[in-house]
Image (cartoon, rainbow, N blue to C red; front, side, top):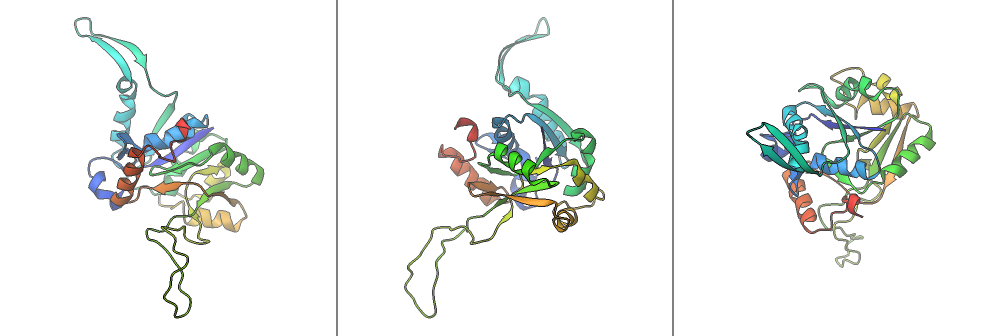
Length: 259
C-alpha cells in the first residue's frame, strides 16, 4: 500500500517558519514533521510514500537526496574520489517526489498523482498533522465499509478550561482542564481511499475538502473512522511550540514506533 502526503501548500499561518522552507519541513525535535508522519506509517509496515510537492519543493528533494548520507557513518577518500559507508541508519522507505504545482489546490494535487498510485487502495494524509492513529485498524475499517473514502474523525481539545454554569448559579462543580469539544468531530486527515475518488476531482483548482468530499458524502461513499486518542496538527507557531514541548518531555503520544 502507498501513502500520499500533501506537502505543497504555502503554510501562511506559520510564516515565521515557512519563509525559507515548506511547512512539512518545519522541525519537531530536530526532525521535520514530515519525518514524524512517515515514521507513524512505517511502524505499521507502510513504507511506500508519494509526496506531493509545491511551494519550495526543492527543499524536500534535497532532504531525501542527502538522507542516506545524513543517516550513515561514512569515510570519504578524497584522493581516490571514493566513499565508503560503514553504517546505514536510513529507514526502509521508497519515496516518490512529485511536483504538483505551486498554486495547485489539495484536490488537484491528489488528481495529479493518479498514475503513481495505480488502481489500488491508498492512504492519504496532510504534511502537518500527527497522532497515535492505528493505521492497520484504519485500513481494516475502510475495507469493511465498502466505500470509496474513509477519513479519520478526531475531537480537538479546547485551548481553555471549560465548565458549566446553570441559570444564575456562580459555583463551578465540573471544571475540566482543556476538555474535548463535546460531540464535535472534525476531519483529522489520515484517509484511506479507493481509486474511484479521482472521478470526483475536476482539476487543479479543486479543493479536496469541498466539492469532492461533499459529493462522496452525498453518494454514501464517505465514512468516518473515529479516533479518540491523540491528534494534533501544526497550523500555527503556537502548535509547533506545543509539539516541541511534548517531544522534549519524552512522552510524545505519536511516537508509536518506540512503543
